[in-house]
Length: 199
Image 1 (cartoon, rainbow, N blue to C red):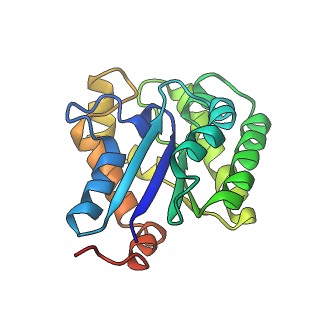
Image 2: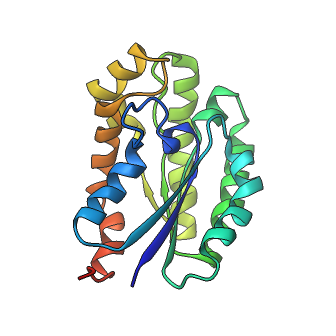
């Protein structure tokens, strides 16, 4: 059966900075399409969005795209803007919990942790400190969580491209590095192992 996935989050979900206009979302979905899966993606990343912004909009946007479809999925990834805008951690986590509890009632859901900010050590320290709390929250809710911050912090493609651009957003190499982390994630792979390949 065809699958439809809504990806919600910030500029990293949107793929800002990628001259190919794919970001990691376009790359991971293209890979599945090339493998024969019938997949429709909705990239609903908005530049500057915090957890509060995602909370305010995701239900209406998901319902308008997925409500009538039986094989629907949700992926969330945000948090860097919460850190950059110094949103208190407790508020970020409250927003995240409210999003994810409602998401679970709507469709199978995955959460991908926030990516690093290359040019602001203070903000990136806040991103790093938020990640384990997001992971713990997801674990308590039974939602798979992919931590990417530390691995991308060690990625020369992500960090060097981000510094060369606006200090936050990488180009092709960085988004390819993030796409690889998602593609190799067993919880992402499991969605497609249970979805037959179209012929």
